[in-house]
Structures are given as C-alpha cells and as structure tokens.
Amino acid sequence: MLRYTEERKEAVLKKLLPPINRSVAAVSREEGISGATLYNWRNQAKAHGVPVPGEKPSPDDWSAEAKFAVVIETAALSEIELSEYCRRKGLYVEQVHAWRQACIEGQQSSRERQQAERAEAAALLVLRKKFECLLERRQRGRMTSLPDRQKFVAWYEAAVTAGARRQVVCAELTISLRTMERWIADGVIKADARTTTARPCPVNALTPEERAEVLAVCNSAEFASLPPGQIVPRLADRGRYLASESTFYRVLRAANQQNRRGRSQPPRHHAPPATHVATGPRQVWSWDITYLPSSVRGKYYYLYLIEDLYSRKTVGWEVHEQECGSKAAVLLQRTTWRESCLNRPLVLHSDNGAPMKSATLLNKMYELGVVPSRGRPRVSNDNPYSESLFRTLKYCPQWPAAGFSSLEAARTWVHGFVEWYNQEHRHSRIRFVTPAERHEGKDKMILAKRHELYQAARQRHPERWSRNTRNWQIIGAVTLNPQQGNDTERMTA
Image (cartoon, rainbow, N blue to C red):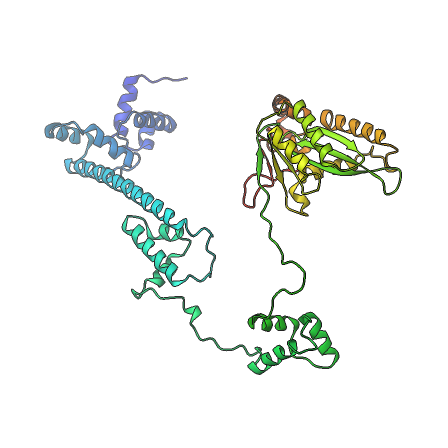
C-alpha cells in the first residue's frame, strides 16, 4: 500500500487549510491522491484542534468547531502576533474578535440558563410542597371552588416570580395555562360560573305538579312501605303511568326520602389488604385449607398447606379430619422450626376463615414472632397463591376422582404430590425451575447455564434467531396483593 511522507502530507494539507482553502476535489486531481485519503487527513487535523473550514471558502461560513479552534489558538497572542496569525490564515482581526465575543456571550447565556433552571427547580419544589395538601389528582372539566382558585393563583404568581416558567407551573398544578389565563384575565378572580348560570329547564323534565304527584303516590298508605320497583309495576297494572322507575328514585332522592330501611346493613367498604413483598425465601408465607373428598359422599378430609411465596415451595402440610385452629398452630410451629424461621421477620397470609382467626393460632403466631396478614372477607383473590396451588393439586392427572378411602390414603397421596411439586415440577412463574431449587438459591446457576446454552446455539446458527434468545433472567421480588398503579407485576402461583 502506498504511503506518504509527513512532509508531503503537510504540504498537501496547507492547500486544504486557511488561507488557501482549496476544495478536496481540486487538490485530489492536482496531487493524484484519492479524495477519501484527503478527507481522512483533514479529519485527523480537525481532531488535533487545527481550524478546518471544510468546503466553505469564506471564513464566515466556517463551522462552529473551526471558529472555536481559532479562538483557542489566538487567546494568548498579542496584537502583533494576532495580526500575523490572521494574515497567515486569511482572516481579519475583527472576525477573530467577533468569534471570541460570541464564545463569551454563549458562555454567559449558558450560565444564565443554568441559573434560571436552578431558580425554576427551587420554585417548583416549593410549589410541590404547597400542593401536597390536595392529594387527589384533578380531572378535566372538574369545577374548582373560589378559595381553591385563589390559592392556585397565589401559588402560580409566586412560582413565576421566583423564576419558573408559566407552562411548567401550570403542569405542576394539573391545570392548563389557558385556564390560568382565563382566571386572571380581568384582574379579579371569580367563582366558577357554572354554579350560578341560569340554565333552561329540559323539555322532558317533570313539572312541579307531576313531582308532587309522584311524592303523594309514594307516601300514600297503600305504597308507603314499597320501593319504586314495586310501585311502578302496580300502577302500570291499573293503567296509570306517572314516571319511570329511575325518575321515582330521583324524585325521592331530591326530597330526601330515599334512605335505607329495614334490617339490612348498609354496604361496607373494606380497605384493600396489605401489600407484602418477598425478596427471598422464608419471608412471606401463604396458607389455606381445602377439602379432600372421601369415598363416602358428604365426608371430607381437610388439607392444611403452607406455601412460600418467593420460591412457591410447599414448606408445610398436614391432613386432618376437621378444621381446627389448634391443629393449624401445631403445623405452623413444626414448619417454623423446620425452616429455621423462629423469631425472624416472617409474614403469614391467609383468608378470613374461622381456623385462621382462632385465638389459639394467633397466640402461637405471636409466640413464634410471625406477623399475621389476612385478606378481605369473601374475596378469594386476596390469597391467590394458595388458591392456585390447590387448583394444580386437584387438576393433576393422578387426582383420585373417586375420593380417598381413608385418612392415611389421603396423607400418602398428598405426600407424593408435595414431593413431586417441590422436587420435579418446573414452575412456569419462576422460569421453569423447581420450587426446591429456587428455595435453596440454585436457580441463579441453572438459569445462567440455560442462557449460555442458548447463546452458544445462536452462535452456531445465527440465521435461526431473528430476535433475542429466550429470557432466562432470574425472577426478582414477588409481591402479594399489589395495589392498583403498582409497577410490580401481580405474579400468581
């Protein structure tokens, strides 16, 4: 390959650089050197800080990098040295001064932008602390009371005065800039006109006489104890129509006569269950009791089963002939000792069955240092891991459809199932490793080997892989009953 001496290279570069500024094509034809080589030499000179104007012949058209390089080279030169430099490069002294001033102004503007950003961040931080009292997020079209409007305008003006941009402040207040401008347009903050505007009465609305007639019918002796759902059909049987059933309810509600009556309790809203996160085994357990049918119709055995949420391993189980809190306490104590969880931060989650809430079991949990956790009444979704495990148990091919002949037969079958489930079953929600392997921490090595195997197979036949290989990354933390809006995936057994 042809090599050029440094002297030849330097001589050719002088033709490309100021003050000559010849084009690459012209120098290539004259010197017999390829254009790619000349472009490479020019880029190398540019990387070393040499002013490279590119294809533009006029210095005013040079790139910002070339102008900045000239400013750096002339920063320490005297007036005479600067004049000599400009003559060599084909520049004017005034151009260099203008470029230097542009750099200074750019630095000053950058500093001013940084100061403005800091001021805006501080103003938004103060605004966010004030806005924390309004916990719920605003919705489009929602009316804002006059006191809230006054607060918003005061916070808006304080933040803008402190240096924050108007659009950013309004976004922090969850209102549009147009809405804020409408509030402060006249200099006087007014209440929402939607609450005081006189609106025309709908053409399909009942007249006052018709509303009075509906109330009179509902309060008559015949219909005094009946709801509108019973009143409207009876009036229809008599050929009389006053209003629809929903209109009856609306009229009664407007007259404050639509209230709960009778012995039925008002609906109660239960708080969502507590969220628990397991980042390793022996942190969160889930337990429940399920029926095991016997060969005699109407007779059942009861399987007590404790599952580790993180590893999905069945850590404790027993079969008895009845549900009892004391038997559950014995199973919990034996499981805690076997897993070496005595006086460790352990959570035991269950539903609201009688054995789960028994005083005997609660006392044993406090004695062992186990934290109780229960779901909402009559909500099976709050204990999904145990319910899913019971489905796996009862839908496996070996499940005796005719029932268990005796208590010992039930215990023997469950023992075999638990051994298979813990030691052989590849669980789909933990990357198809067995619960025992994940419980003992062996899943990391197993999944790493699978990943290496797939990468090797892809290297042998890359044409067979249009995308990434199968995901063999280890499953991280497991969340029990995540709240709505939580990013953690709801993982079931």
